[in-house]
Length: 394
Image (cartoon, rainbow, N blue to C red; front, side):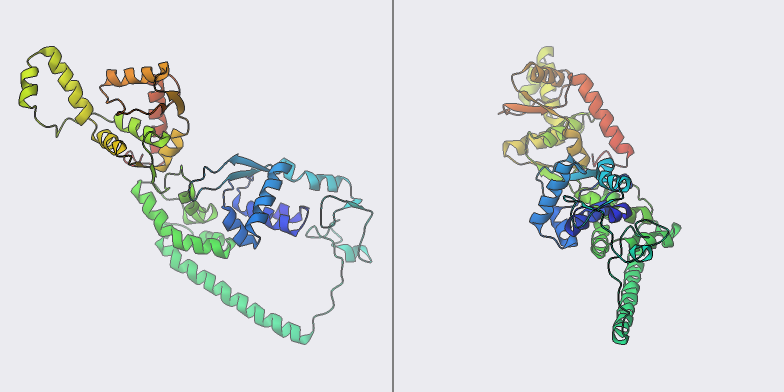
């Protein structure tokens, strides 16, 4: 942020948005995903202006679109700064001191100097002033009435500061494990946030705590939670603490949930007794094996049976965020293709139920040979579990 403050950006509007984007980024300029509405509100720009400037930044190469929003509610584009490209303009300016930037970056004004002396133009220890700016006007002394007004404003700021600290002290004890950590470190991060961010934190922390406890996750220190705005993870669809979302039958996330359920051990308890007709048929060993396979497919994985029954009624299923992210690697295949036939054969070998009828024309499955793809899927689930996601949540 401090570098962008000194960086010519082509106008106050562009700089305001760039500074706000930098506030969301980490030290390397990565991990920016606020919504356009939020940027517009916090910079006091119109939504259309924010959209236009974001597009301009991407076109200029100073902002990189890492991931485009899918259109789901609460999901925004994800950006990273290209720091090398971002600071090219300043590097060029420093290499050519004769070039000065005036409110835009299109037309350079050569040989311009303002002020009467070097002192009037800025700090004598820094060529461009102590804050990288040039003094152009000698301010008149402040009169007595203005000083009184300033004193009143200073008192108001002090009062606001007390209010901010008071709100922190109300939030602080609500965070799990706060007692064993540094209050000063957390307060420092709290003061560095904007007013809207503090309000968001107060409102959304209870939901974040509940979601983290639901997945049996661990909590970072309060200072880290505040610095990294962890509550925003609830807006990231693939995050462990994201709200579960409903996905249609046979969609990528639905298929991922189905395969994860099939990887669980077959459930043997609770099966209904054989009917009289099945008992008679089971006297034939081949018929007995067939009846057992049918009963396995029907009763062995009750969650999958529920999914199939709901699919028949065109009802979707709740899918957890990390599984949505894993499903993004699934590939599309025709139901009559060799790839789909290989997946159906795997189901038969494992005793798993195949997809219900009518089977859609196009299916989503993990990429690769089925056995290896299932092993890779299991590895991804294990990795998610190690990050604090419970098996039930996954």
